[in-house]
Image: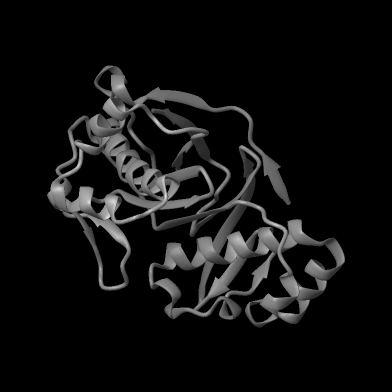
Amino acid sequence: MIIQDTYTKAIPFLRIDEYPQIKIQDKESFLFHYTFDKQFGNDLWHHYLNFLPYNFQNEVLRFRRWQDRYNCLLGKLMVYVGFKIFYNSELSFENFLKDSYGKPYIKDCKMNFNISHSGNTVVCIFSKEPIGIDVEEAKDIEYTLFENVFTDQEMKEISSVGLSKFYEYWTKKEAIIKAIGKGMSIPLLDIEVKGDHSIYDGIKWNIKSLKLNNMNCAIASKYNTNNVNLFEVVF
C-alpha cells in the first residue's frame, strides 16, 4: 500500500539557529525533503556552497548539470540541518565520512541517516536505528527490461498493475539495500518484497511506501516505519 503524506512542517535553512532542538526517540524517524523548481540567485548559491569545505565543494562542482549539483549540495546541507536540530551543534564536515561500501556516516555519532535524490527532489532520513530511503521520479520506461531484478511474483504484480507497482517495488528494494548498508554488492533480486516487509539474511526489514511531492518514495527500517515525521527544509 502506498500512503499519501500531506502534513509536513517547515524548517527554514537560513534561520536554523532559531529552530528548537528536537530529541529523537527510539523507533522514530525524521524525513527531511526539498523540491526545487529553479536555480538560486548567484549570491545565495555561493552562500550555501560555502557551508561546505573545499573538498566537498569540489565534489558538488564536478557535476555538469545544475540539477545534479543542487542534489549533491542540498543532501549534505540536510545532514547539517539534522545534526543542528538533534544535537544543538554545528556539524564539522571533517567528521562526515564514508565507509568501505560508500555509505555516508558521521564519526562518533550514534545517529543514522540516509540520503536519496531524483529529478529535482532531495530527501534525507534520520533515525537512531539503521534506516534506508529511496526516492524516484516516475518515468515512462519499459519495465520488462528489468525482469532480472524482480522475483516471478513481483513481476507478475508489476505486469498486472503497471508502472506504479514497478516503482513501488523498486524503491522498496533500494531502501532495504541502503538500510543494510552494503551498497549494490547485494543484487536487487536477492531482496524479496512481501507487502510491507522483507527478510534478508535472517533480518526482517519493515517498509513504508509514500508519495512525496508526486515522487515515489520508500523507507526501510528494522522497526515500525509508521512513526515518520515529515519536515520540508526550505532553502
